[in-house]
Structure formats: structure tokens, C-alpha cells
Image (cartoon, rainbow, N blue to C red; front, side):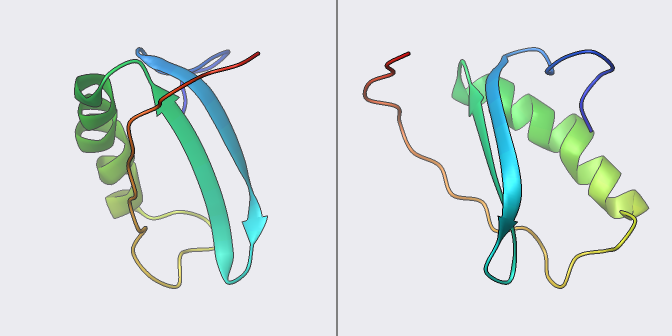
Length: 71
């Protein structure tokens, strides 16, 4: 779902891995607008096309405001 060689515009961090009952994906965007743009124009369209291995259910979206980032 990501462009070759990097993250989509506005995304600053991405981590994913298997978890109980599926996968957990954490994507940090620089704004709600960049997340909405990625979700609506790339992610959902790609999911509608189908993913190898499929999904047991539609993805569950959870959002929150980032209070602090430490690197």
C-alpha cells in the first residue's frame, strides 16, 4: 500500500505485526487531513480490490492525538 521506497505523503511512522486474531498496524501522520487522504484515496481502494490472504473482518480504526514523541 505504500509507495515504492518510502511512506505516503504525510505519514511519518509505520509499524505492523501479527497480534491476537490478526494484525496491528500503527501509522502516524502529520495531520488528520493526511491520514484521511491516505485512508480514502489509497487504503480503502486497495482493500476493496482484495488482499492476498484476505481479512477475517473489516479493519478497525482507532485514532488519538499524539501528546509527545521521543526519539
